[in-house]
Amino acid sequence: MIDKQRLQYIFSILTLCFHLAGSEVYAQVVITGVVHDALTGAPLSEATVQEENGFQATVTNPDGRFEIAVGVIPTTLKISRIGYSSQQLLITQEVPGIQNILLNPAIFDLDPVIVTCQG
Image 1 (cartoon, rainbow, N blue to C red):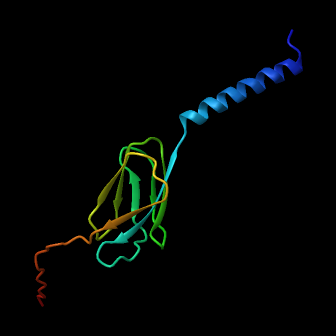
Image 2 (image 1 turned 60 degrees about the vertical axis):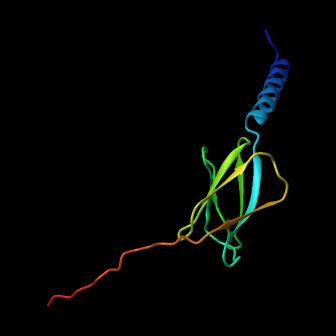
C-alpha cells in the first residue's frame, strides 16, 4: 500500500509536469500599439483591435492605446472604428515597442434624401 507522503510526492510531481507542459501550449505574445487618425494625428478611442483568425479582441483606451495577447506569430490584426476604413496589420515577428497605426476617415458618397410632408 502507498503511504500518504509518497502519494503527495507523486501528486506534486504530476502537478508540476502538467503546469510546465501547459505553459508552453498557452504561451502568448503581447502586442501594444496606438491608433491615430491619419489626417489629424489625434488618438482614436474605442477602435476595435482583433486577431483576424483568433478569438482575441480589445478596444483602444481614450489615448488610442491598446494591448492584445495573441497565441502565435505570424498573425494579422484587424483594426476598425466607425467612420474609418479598416486596416490590417501583419505581425511577422515579436517587435519590442509600440505599433503606430493610422486609420483613414471613410468617405461616404450617399444619395440625397428628400423629405416631404403631406398634410
